[in-house]
Image (cartoon, rainbow, N blue to C red; front, top):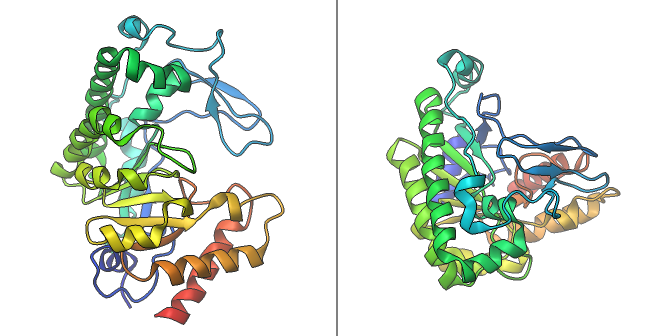
Length: 326
């Protein structure tokens, strides 16, 4: 029987996996670092490390920035240098000891020591100024938008250097949502101009410093952006919703990139979730997408589920499909 790590590599390289990769099982994410991503409690709000007000309303499955007139951080993109200040990411070595102990306990023959980074470049932009202003500013103030992106890239590379220096990770799990359920937020041409160069620098830096695996979370329609993902150096696109036609993407791009998802969280993960829905969705995904370049997974951007029991139930069904199809 292959180790979890070996099975993942056989899957994404088109080799001989002996079972389906089971959601996030191959990534051991190190979350107890001194570089933290602040988020509010359910029903509460915080001002995060960038000065952005983030709120998690009761009854919602996640947090989001507040962009009314009172709370919007950046109201004039041309004055971004006066407003946006990067948070400190340099901490003394002793602050890293807890994370280093966590890493030391991980069997790297089984799991990838994984760094978690969020929000991504596009998300930072709309966190700063709101989605509407961000989209308009790509058209109306492209120079300022390029400047902010360059600033964020420089900051992310410094962030990477701290993680690499102290933890020597095997993998990166990076968030950045690029679309809705039915289309990308940006036309491919605009995406290529603004976003692609940024990630080529960021992901290239991680890989040139020993990181083997780049996993990018983007739970939206982005089938039109896959060639750019390959160019960026993404190994696994996590969060592939079914509107992308995952089997067709595997057929077209398998061998250059792998796809993790095809089990829409919105379909299976809700308050009164049903085991029979999970059975149906996991079976469909596994049978339609096959054994290579595909990892069956809920599209949510991390291990776990919004409602108790859903994630484990998906795991159980993936085990069942492995016994049936391998």
